[in-house]
Image (cartoon, rainbow, N blue to C red; front, top):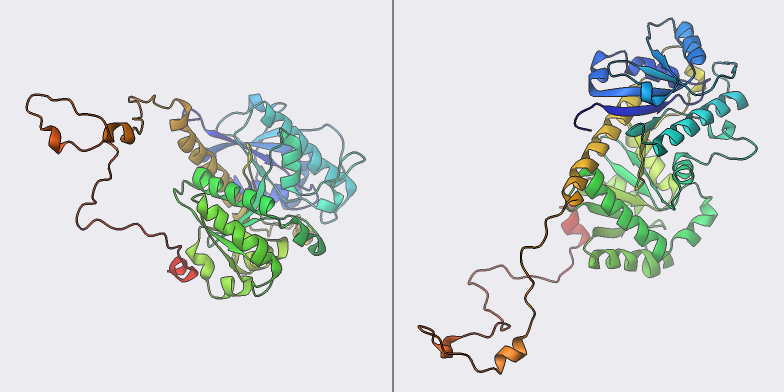
Length: 395
């Protein structure tokens, strides 16, 4: 990756929405092509239609396979040859299927390692279905496409916060049954590892929200609280559970690197309230680095040239940063140094009752058993077993 630019696959999203407008505006800046090599998974005919509708100067090079992508150009990969009618501002079955075909082609190319990261333009979930597949979100789609039992964690990210989800896309009545020790602990571990590997945080701080409004329900007492303590026993810097209203209204979230919410609305409402125009979604804990702008297809604005492309640009930046961080994190682990010593076995009892050998210049009566405890130097700090409180964390 050091010898070439990072290849960024970008799917065009719903073809009746703002996807192509976001792409054209993002790569209208020459600096973007110095940062990465984009491969747009879409349709040249649909792209040309959007370009004409917006009356914009948008240049792109048509390619038939990802291997043909060239640096310094906006490479548009033709994912399908079918004629797709474009009805700007109207979600249709055809526009949803075109979005799905682009994602399918991108996932196929990822399995062949033809690009480094994936950025998905906005889609309409209701229209993205066919007779064999129902689209249930980018995380579920990525898990299904990658296979191998990989499980992702949906995260929402902006300049002020990162929020991860324990449950994703569930009806509220079904959430409590999915708040189990096994599920919660696996998400805490996954988020902790993602913060270390994807964001290069050596000791990330994780704030865990409660399920109930005042954090005193049965789930907090028997599941969430004990699970947080178990994670702390593993060396994970997790704290909670916190009442969601106090956590956000009193800005407690600012003391943490990432927040773990129990269900969608608990995360979406504060995220969208505090979001400016650069919010993104990220599917963590998967081999594929996959991000998306936190936007809808915005059918009302489609074709008018008024959409803000900042979120797509930040989704690209985030994906590039993450793949670089992963490379930095993994590089030392590829060829670890072999041990240059043998660990000394603790045989203190044998030494304690053995007869020391006499040597020149060595006084046997001053010899200390190898396993004997040594006194701590004067003034050395004492180790405390006290768990930090929420007040300590906030400070």
